[in-house]
Length: 349
Image 1 (cartoon, rainbow, N blue to C red):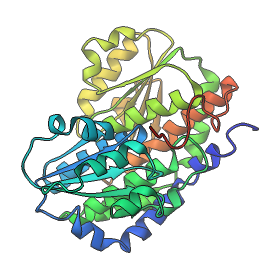
Image 2: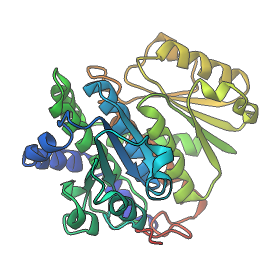
Image 3: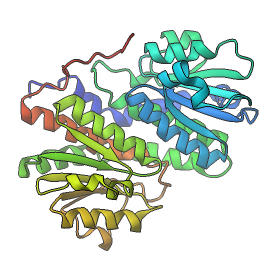
Image 4: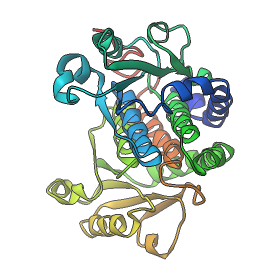
């Protein structure tokens, strides 16, 4: 393999990246108490751009459920250009910047835009401790998430996991045990996911790919959609699972690959959507924590594991297969995932 020599090993380093994030979080418990665990904040707003925005969506969903407090996610540009439309005036707010590099112009402008405002505080999460954002505001740092490749893979996993683990640490209950369980299982399915992706693509020719996910998996579905688009330049779309039935399903036809990120919370409803898409001629791939009779109809099923934890804690476990699908789609097309067209690792205005 001559292409993807940066991206491929980084996908395979997710187990180590998650373990490093867990270890680093133990050193930053004061940060957790000061920001995520601080109940003085009436609203917490997670922001990012591109993949970082999709992480922010999963982080905000987890925060709302596990801590029972208001949280939202927005593209960074919405805060520095449309702040009053995004967040109502009044109330104590925490703005959480999410950026792999910590150098994205938009996240830095967003944080700058609320500096000096009486009711706003800021913090962030990044992979680079000496980045502009880390110098601008206090950050969680996921050090092993640093990447040489342009496309985010292990950084996305490590940062999402680290923030969820921080939320778990601030919550009452067993969420930290769930995140520890995810850490212990991270990496166990990497080889299997790699082989599965290669075999699926070898045996089929897909003309379009659609990703479906709900709850904490909506952001993951969007990220998976972006990954295959960035790496291989194919057109693909992502939707909330049940929302896909309201019009967008008209694009399904033979040759379509519909990938369902199956939750336990809405399992019975989501399976019905997948059954409907199969009836329209799609090849249905289900990613699930556990294979059961209700998934037997699917053309392909991949068991990610993690049936012992909640949907939210399990979110990062979906990513290896999704990233490998993007990677091998690119390689099979003769496209180098290390050199995505029109893209750079840091986007600056």
